[in-house]
Every structure is written in structure tokens, then in C-alpha cells.
Image (cartoon, rainbow, N blue to C red; front, side, top):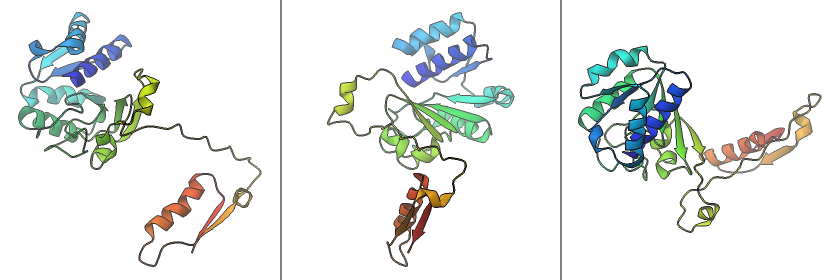
Length: 221
């Protein structure tokens, strides 16, 4: 599908920059369409090693010798439980102890709910496109994705103002650099009087947020 097409783009980019790449194809490559078919043809012309993976054992030795794995099996459109060879491959990835990069969302995570659809890739890094997907941010999808990066793909600015937009991003403010001849007392003190003896979560995070934002001393009562 489209996620597999993105994986083929990554494969040819790594190859073009001098990296050694092996591509494992799940499913029938003769049914590729659009960008996936186009990039499949390009990868073929680059003489990148491609293997039709019908048995997970075919990948074990290659995975063992690899530095990292690019997960491009399923994208955000997955709406069914992962079974069969797809489940076997995902379980192999999770057992490999290799650094795993997922494209858009870890394979096996529902794009809207963040739920695990039977089994899911446990990624170290996920790169999603345009905007985060709901499944990138809701548990357990958030935890499965590792560190999340959002890369731009030329979404029109007007899209950011759409009433149908569920998720948006903002640019984090840069915290001013502290001078080396100062101490915590120079950066303000705040007393938080909040919560109750059995409810410390929100007060704790409120006090911590002041320190995270560059404050000096935070008191919680």
C-alpha cells in the first residue's frame, strides 16, 4: 500500500547515500499501484536486493546482520486485526533488539484510536507526515511509537484553520539561556497551594511545569 511505497522511497534514499539496504516485500508486488508501483520500479532499477517474504525465517539472518529496521508494513488505514505472516513479521521485529524506525505510525496501531490491532511494532522512532495522527498521540499508540517526528509535506496553510482538523502543532518557545554567573534564586520563586492529601498529580505537574519553563524554585503546599 501507500505505507509500503513510503518504505521504498526510504530504501532508495539510503541506497543513494551509500547505505546497504535489503527490502522485504509482504503481499503481491504485482498489485502495487500509483506511487508504490512507481517507487517499486525505481528500486528495481537501482538493483537493491528485494525478497518476497512469505516465510519469516527468510529474514532472520538479514535482520541479525542489520543495524536498523524500517517498518513500512501498515499505515494509518489499518482497520482489522493483524494476522498470519504480517503478525509473524511484526513479532520478529519486536524480538530483534534492533533500532526500529516506523513510517507514519507503527504497523499494527489503529490510526484513529491508537489501539493495538492484535499486535504492533514497538518503534524507537516514528516519522509522521503533515500533522500527527490521533493514533500517534493516544495510548497505547503513543508508547509504541517511541520518539515522534512530524515532517512537512506541503499541506496548504488554509488547512491549519479547518474546523475539521482534530490535531494541530505549535512551535515551542525557546527558553532564554541562563547566564553562567547566576543561580536558581535569580529565576523566580513560585508557591503552589493546590490539591489534597490523596490527589497530588495535578499539583505536582503544575509545580514541575514552572521549573521546566525556566523557573528557579518551585514550592508545593
